[in-house]
Length: 92
Image 1 (cartoon, rainbow, N blue to C red):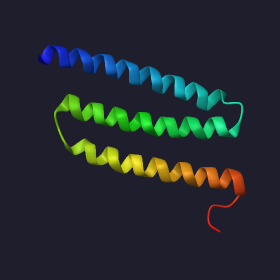
Image 2 (image 1 turned 90 degrees about the vertical axis):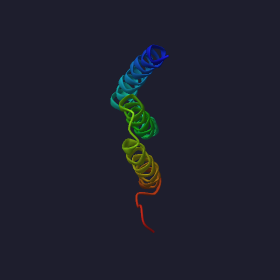
Image 3 (image 1 turned 180 degrees about the vertical axis):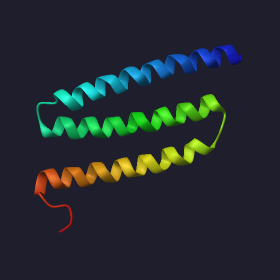
């Protein structure tokens, strides 16, 4: 049973790594600002999933709290960056 879980974790790490690579390419080569904002949001989601996977692989619950904090910060930073891109000001 643990061999199957280890194989699934290895496959998932590979998928998340590929996703991070493709997201970085979109961040660098994004033709518009909207593409770059979306790439940053996707990058934060991928970082959260990678932290959760590391927590599952290490069989620890400590990293899940860090993943929640990074998810909240990623959401707030995406909203702030979008407001800055649209209005030129974050706080009214």
